Each structure stands twice: as structure tokens, then as C-alpha cells.
Image 1 (cartoon, rainbow, N blue to C red):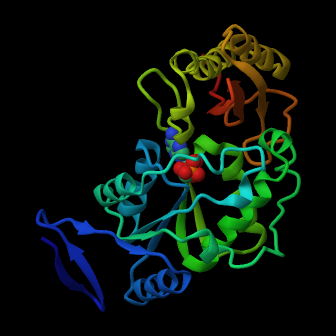
Image 2: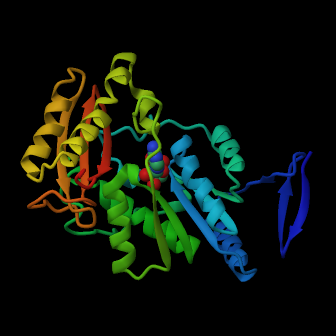
Image 3: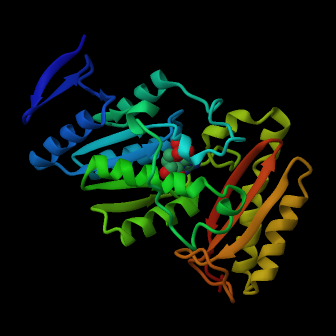
Length: 305
Ligand code: AMP
């Protein structure tokens, strides 16, 4: 049985165990008005934008948003703008009941689940392009991808209003793009990067892992092994970016089920190449396992002394 209790001027639904039941919003106007009211009541807002099919990686963001803010919201929207025609938009995995249960478990008060028509009632004439940082890596193999991401994130942030927004380091280039966009456009948002959550064998959790067949799934942790091997090389004193790149690429090429896309060491803020490897930079890798592309990354450690 659900009880409705007053929470300032906002009602909250409470289940038998005393937990808050997330309120579901399908309209831009409703979600925006509710969060405005939350802020008027003096509560800070934490936002977790997602495409749904939520797993423990998303849960880590939702728990942090709930812990660091008085109100936490998650958005679930599979954004057509960031998929190319050849990509998996139609097949993208969905499970709204499971997503709502996990959101509730993570203390989320509001879930925004708009339809495509609600978000894009007419073809978009506006697109947010973040230059430079989007040119390489994911941007090279998916030319329209980051304009689609930046546009939908800008729109979700415009709808949400002032907030802290939580993004995973799992999609490291995306995080860098969102940070840069927020800074360039003076958006009223504090972008918070959160560590990668991994499966027991080291594979970074991803909604797309369900596409992997058993052989590919067994091969996929090679990405993390490559990152760890390169990190070990740096700890032992390597400073040549070429040597670190080779270590990443050779490890991935050693796995027959993996087709290497890129492997590099870059500046963590600009994603530009580096002349010398140093702590705080980022190791980036991507490879295809059959038709599924997986990404991973790791912070460059300091030298062991
Ligand atoms: P997605 O639903 O794939 O668009 O992801 C939504 C958010 O969750 C993004 O900020 C992702 O970077 C983040 N995320 C996805 N997988 C993980 C993971 N394994 N660890 C941490 N964050 C993640």
C-alpha cells in the first residue's frame, strides 16, 4: 500500500517499508515545474541522465546524487540524435520496471521518462557542437554522436534547471565534452564525474554488454587488462607515449575476439596527445567484439619509487 505524505508543498509517495516511491514524469512542463518547486523549497537537485536499462554503474551515480543532494532525479531517454542510421537505436535494450525499482532503491525522487515526440515534437533545427574534443576517438568512428549527446544533455539541463549532474568516467570523452559545453555556455550546473563500476572479472558495466555472446563476453575483460598492463609500464618508469600505446594495442591484439579501434594516452581535460606520459593523464581504449563496440579507460598512475 502507498501512503502520500506532505514534503514541504510537494507530496511524496511512501511504500510499506517507508521508502520514497519515485514520481514518474512524462512531460517537460511537469518535470521542470516539479524541480523548480523542489528548489523553491530550498532543496538542491542532483540529476543523473541515462538511456535506461540501468545497472550498478548507473546505480552508483544515482546513489551519489541522492547522497549529495536533497532531491535526486534520473532521466531515462534513448536519444535518437546520438545514434547513426546503422546503429542499435531500435534494438537498444529497455526494461522500465527494473529501472524504476533500481531508482527507488537508490533514493531517487523523480524519474523523467519523456517520449521522443515530447523531446522532439518537430525535427531539431538546433544542434550543440563542441569543437576539438569531439574530433577524435568516439567522434572519429561516430561522426554525429557527440552533437547528439551535447544537444540532448543541453536540453535536459535546460529543462532541469540549476543542479549537480552526475556522469560516469566510463564514457570519458562524453564527460569531457559535457564539462566543456557546460563551461562554454555558463550552464547553471556542477558536472560531477563518477568512477567506473566493473564486473568481477574487470569488464566495465555497460547496457551493451548484453549483446555479447559467451565467447565475446569471456574476451571483453582484455580491455581492462590492457589498461592495467599500460599502467604497470608507467609505474615502472615508462614516459614514452608510443611505448604506452603499443602496450595497450598489443595486449588487445593478443585477443582474437577483439578488433582494436583505438588505444592512446591523452591529456585528461582536452583529450589531446601528450609529449610525455605523466600522472593524471588518461589511457583510452575501444575495441569491437563482433558488432558490439566497448570502451574503457584508466587514469595514468604516478611512477612507483
Ligand atoms: P548510458 O545509459 O549508457 O547513457 O549511461 C548513463 C550514465 O551512466 C553515463 O554518464 C555513463 O557514463 C554512466 N555509466 C554507464 N556505465 C557506467 C559504469 N560502468 N560505471 C560508471 N558509470 C557508468
